[in-house]
Each structure stands twice: as C-alpha cells, then as structure tokens.
Image 1 (spheres, rainbow, N blue to C red):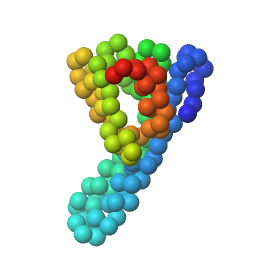
Image 2 (tube, one colour):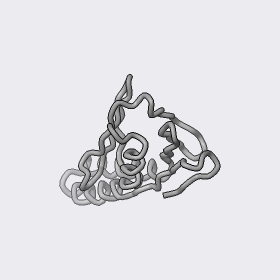
Image 3 (cartoon, rainbow, N blue to C red):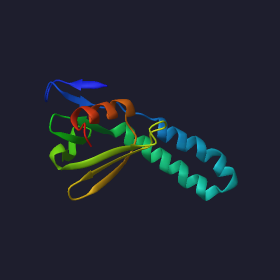
Image 4 (spheres, helix red, strand yellow):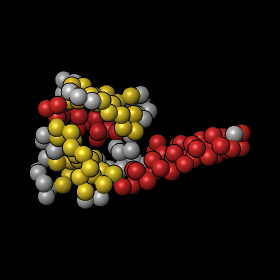
Length: 127
C-alpha cells in the first residue's frame, strides 16, 4: 500500500499484484503442449495482464476511484455515481465488478485485493 501525500491525506494508491498474470502464464505452459494456439493465446493474455499490472495504478481519494497510467489520469469514477460493487471469488479474488448509474465495469484483480476491499468498505460501506 502506498499513501500519496501530494493530493490528499487520505488518497490511497493500491500496490500492483502479479498473481493473476503469473498464474495464467503458468497454466498456459502445459496448454501449449496440448493445444498450441490456445496455449499461445493464454500466454499472451497473461503477459498483457502483467504489463497492465506494471503500468496501471488505482488511487482511492475521498470522492472517487482514479485510474492512472504512469502520471496520466485515464479515468475517474466518482463514488456518488456508484450503485454497487463486488469482488468475485473472495477466497481467490480474480475479478472486481462495480456498477455506476450509467454503466458497469469489470476489472481483473491486478492490485492488492485486501487493500482494494478495505478501501471499498471504507468509502462505500453499504454497497
């Protein structure tokens, strides 16, 4: 967990987690031996997720979830527009879902799942 003091005292930036991409790449290795194209697609997907985990950061401020690539803000999701959220398969978290007033979003868990859940429960407790 990294706490950023440049924006707000309560802005939390989630640390990256490479667990999901690594598992996908490891699973792709034996699949390569059985079905080369399927294994290759799985391996490339795992490498893509690994790149995303290395470059994308989620920051929780008091009012929104901000997604950054490097220093560039890609997207801002104000909490006032959220209707619900959920982390799928909490024992082995792999997918984060949240619904806004106008759209739904699914994100692979490429960041610390415990800190994600903690930040969500703190900022959106009754979702």
